[in-house]
Length: 487
Image (cartoon, rainbow, N blue to C red):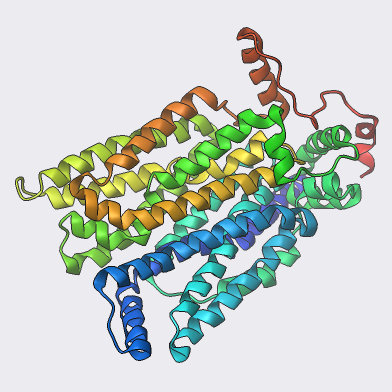
């Protein structure tokens, strides 16, 4: 009876930790991706009015579009900067401390955005978007790291995937209504009450007592001993080594395989064009022939679609596995991109094509939410050890935000330039990503890094290549493991 109560308490603590971290983290990312679409016409009008006030002349429509596109894409530049800050912050302040400190960027951006009208400066909106991007870049890297290190092995995928669920929820809420930065305040009030990542406490800080206390709050006793042993093994292998810097990780030839997988997966997540749909939903549905008075309602449907698929995937990930969801998601996305292209080509010739186009966009987003949206963020946590994980997330985040900036700048011109063939480039990205993941990514569900390494070694031996090794992995039990029960 007591065991059952303790199990429930530990599970509840982990669930509340996830909610507290995510509401001020990836929820904000999703919200700020979609919210910018609603005030498009108002901000463009503000840009024109500001220029009229300053220089006495109105801008050309193409010039307004260019400035507007830059405002939208500045979010990605901020995300890139945030990704580069995330690794050092996670090492210096811890995972929880970094998420709390990250809210300062959010509050400053709110002040700038609210002051832009009275200051008659659209440049303040650009700076506000940059700071919001920094906030998102930090949270998108630190949050899945925090979740992956705090969750037990059998729930690691589901807990880490919850980042995608809150991202999708943020997208949906951003499309439905305007929220304030009060969500950051909620995180500041609640998150300090929850434990830091147990792995960070023991491996990075060497604090076994704090690690034991964190595990006791996050786990049931039946799981605690086994997981503490695993962390102690990794700690023994690490010794006095320090966390790798970005440059050290790039130079380490033994980690090239994982690095390549993470870089391709992170790039494909943005180059597939899914997140740009939220930036430029109006452009896409106009091109598809949806009536203007219906577009705002259709746009809300895109957010609801990804939120539904993210919830479904969260329930499936520990049963289906990572590789199948990731590769399968891209495969279905490529199929829907083809159907969408056909529907656009037949618009005006066959009845009902605008609504088939709309359905294809929904299906495309649904397929993205069922795999790439959440699984991509889990990969660095499962393919890298404690010393290399922060730098790995920096690289993954940098690739994600850099490609989001590129695709965000190019997207409206792709839609206008290619017309009915606008999704063909994204189809090509999805096909390439599906093939690459199918042939290179091992299944990581419920497996330790040592087990994944062993699978790679077997393949390397069969192909006559040198064995791969992780410096910090040790398969022998250190003497410290005998003292687990004392913690």
